Amino acid sequence: MTYALVLNSGSSSIKFQVLDSAAAASDEPLVSGLVEQIGEPNGKLVIKIRGEKYTSEESIPDHSAGLAKAFGIMAEHGVGPKDLDLTAVGHRVVHGGKVFSAPEIINDQVVEMIRDLIPLAPLHNPANVDGIEVAREILPDIPHVAVFDTGFFADLPPAAALYAINGEVAGENGVRRYGFHGTSHEFISQQVPALLGKDPSAVNQIVLHLGNGASASAVKGGHAIDTSMGMTPLAGLVMGTRCGDIDPGIIFHLYRTAGLSIDEIDTLLNKKSGIKGLSGVNDFRQLREMIENGDTDAWSAYNIYIHQLRRYIGSYMIALGRVDAITFTAGVGENAKFVREDALAGLEMYGIQIDKDRNDLPNDGPREISTDESAVKVFVVPTNEELAIAQKATALATAQV
Image 1 (cartoon, rainbow, N blue to C red):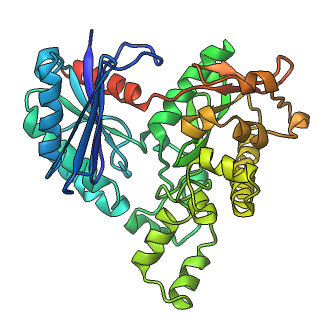
Image 2: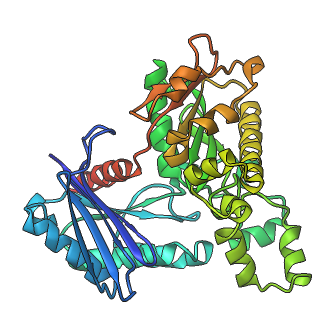
């Protein structure tokens, strides 16, 4: 087997998996784990090895200590990085800017170039760099590969990528639409042609990645032509805690009239808005329960969410001209049947027909939820960003040998 380690480093957490890059999308990883509350008095490590779960609760002062602890537990069970002869370590990096459009073998220069992109992703790239530096120090003899969330959208047409602001200002400051969740959108869009029995170059599709973060993309012949997130992950659909698209004048209004600082507005729009800002919760299971109990705020939040989602679906149908498939993925997209039903309700005139019985089935791998007569096929396809990163990292590392 060709094993790769996939790392997703956050400011106070590290998610990781060890998996066979040749595995099927539905296969369980050999190892999966989460180190959280790094730098706090009570850190926590949860790791699953061959289906068995192990936990540890103790102070984890930094990312280096967290990874060392995780690797130690893995080694005790014969699945440490050195036991498996890893082919590559794949790192999820949120922002590649205009510099990186494809996975990249990591060296000192690449680390510095990712660091230079921190102004474009101040909440994400610093943690990504920390994870890269720690992993390279612990595993110096294994190729490390950066896989960028923005990569799939690097070639957006100018009409979709550029904003209507002064071109010189935009160019000097890197202002453009970069898009995010690209690894997921690319992975899903590659699965759909086989479900349709068509050549990928002939398939026009809309991919809806609906999780706590949410994004939509229009993919034509395997290439993205538009996406909902923008220069930052704040734009587009209503999300768990992010507002999505708003009038930019609201920011000036809150600064001038409400007296909020730029940092306070940043926190408001990124962490205290979206479904949570409207209803008090950002878990769709809780939201649904609140709606069933008659909570008007929850009902309003849900309607705003669905309204924005339908706006993007409609606009991408026009952008693509012909749509062969609409696919739901990620936590909400894969599990919230009511979201899928309401997002596509009443669109029969556009060739979209949901089969209620198929839609009501539990999440169990890729499946069609449209009727046999539906001109536009609708699918639920579980995403697997870790597998996609492992495949990209392995392919690049192997090519370098």
